[in-house]
Amino acid sequence: MSFPNYIALIPAAGVGARMGSEMPKQYALLAGKPMLQHVMETFAGASQIDHVYVVVSAADTYINDLPLQPRTTILRCGGASRQASVTNGLSAIQNDWDADDWVLVHDAARPGLTTELIDKLIAFVKDDPVGGLLAVPVVDTIKRSNGHGRSEATVSRELLWAAQTPQMFRHGRLLQALRAATDPDSITDEASAMEAQGDHPKLVEGSPRNFKVTLPEDRLLAELHLKGSL
Ligand code: C5P
Image (cartoon, rainbow, N blue to C red; front, side):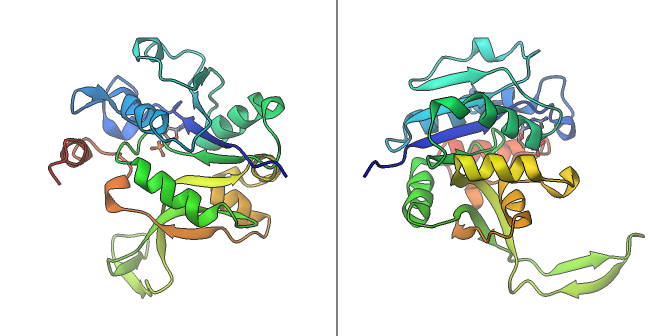
């Protein structure tokens, strides 16, 4: 029996409009290094990961300035949406891996990921028939707006989790699910593509430090985590 490989795929072809800067947010400096470099170094240091792929846009002029990490390949096939970037990346490596190999898709915009969280996800999901994702239970009281700035209802948070990445699925099944997605707007992560196929991905508790850096004020919190001050 052969053991599956573990591949990381980092979509990093976004423009990060909400950060309000000229530079795509994955290259914003955090604790002295571009956000994407933190993520690439974490995966390069994760002993269970066999290879790392970073998906950037064909026009990316920043990636060449980042130090190349071991077992890492840059794919210049980013698409117009996150889903397109992931689908293009998975298609580009299709012939190099088995359909049953695991892929861990991780946002470049989550620099707080640690090798411990990667190991935890792999440990909880490696024997699962479907796959799974890091996520955190929702702690706030959740309101549904009426669309005009007023609260219409309180939504029970009992079953709610906020999805993070990495999201870990079998290469073949994930690519099939992403290609089959008929409503691209409803597919905002890999798990939603799998759910649309009727699968139920496993929820593995992640960490608040693995949050997505989105707004300019998020950088300060990310830096505190990266410097080990929190
Ligand atoms: O914009 P957002 O933070 O949701 O993006 C999540 C991740 O998807 C980021 O790492 C971003 O670079 C990536 N992305 C991509 N291609 C796009 C849009 C986003 O690879 N067209």
